[in-house]
Length: 141
Image (cartoon, rainbow, N blue to C red; front, side, top):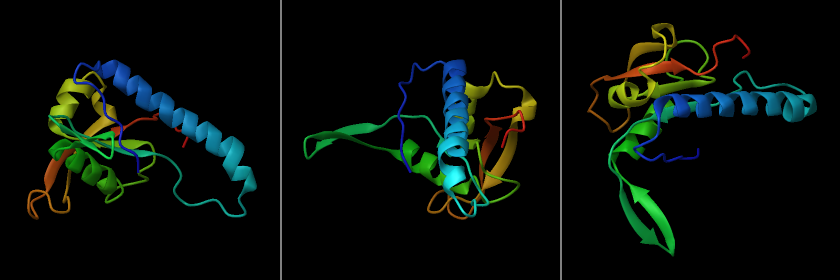
């Protein structure tokens, strides 16, 4: 799992475009470079994302900038929960309501549905409300 941080000023449509292009690039490269070399392809192929927004604290550890904060924890838990219900988690994102309003509200309603997930060590055992966003919608996965 990798964590990508974006400045608070990141434009929503630009972020959406970046994620869509990243998914398409991964999909094309997997089909071109990896799949031909597999005897049996895995059942699930694709990227999934967890996205939150908020303040992070920065510190230096061993000469490198490191970041900590609730948004990282929530985003990681959301990414892990993409697969918990429904169809394939490939090329999907679970997004907090705050991140949705700021960065993804421009999407048509058909691409973002309300869901609830139980996130480990977050919110007790109370389901956490979020939006599930389809990043590739042309049926190419």
